[in-house]
Length: 176
Image 1 (tube, rainbow, N blue to C red):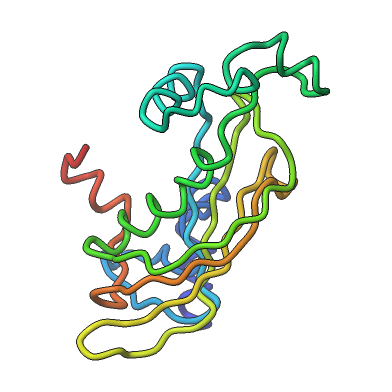
Image 2: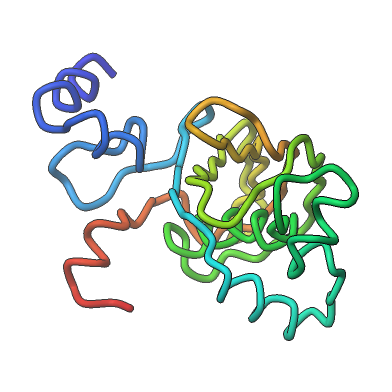
């Protein structure tokens, strides 16, 4: 643990360490343990919201019309909460290809607006072997502006392995 912290402090800037706490050593694979956090940053665009509206058939004017959103007290169109929460399965599938979602609960705390910088985070809280897979429980949170919790909850997933595929490693191989 001390070696991992030392490697992290020597080899990564604060921005690089945002992606994976505890998984920033030079080796391409690490094993997930309780307490480990995986993160992904994203800003949602107007185009993202329009695409999500089409796919989900959720054409609530709060998501696409500024006047409608302002009429009920928002600053402008609100990004769909489920679109923001899609960061959680993205994080899992990026680091654990073949992961299967079992359950998810969500609490929507604050609105997210187009262009807000959001950081999605999953933190392993419980891991146990279940046949040839691992049943994993994660605390989930999304932050706006690095500190305001906009969504929190919990998810359970079946992971094919506890070996974490590092996102940087996959991106360097040209995956889209």
